[in-house]
Length: 134
Image (cartoon, rainbow, N blue to C red; front, top):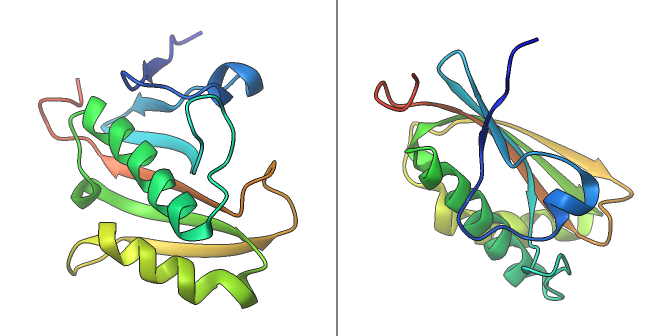
């Protein structure tokens, strides 16, 4: 069995332990980041959607930074949203604050009925820089 090369940000929220998952795993030159939500350190959601999306990106960026990456290294994004017909445009406007410039990563947006009390979740795969890929 291969030992997982786990990436854990310095400041981690309670959900990792509560739900028993790793923030990210390095494998074969890629970084696979678990879905990030707008979780405060105690695991509770930010109540405001805009702030929840911002905090999800801040949590994501902390993991990327710990692995030596930035959002520019992200190649694939999956976004999960509660009631996307109502919230997509608003959440996507906030996401643009973090998105950077073209060329953009691939994106799949999925409408879901449950996110454990959250409204927005972002999961990514990033290409590790050559120095961090080892």
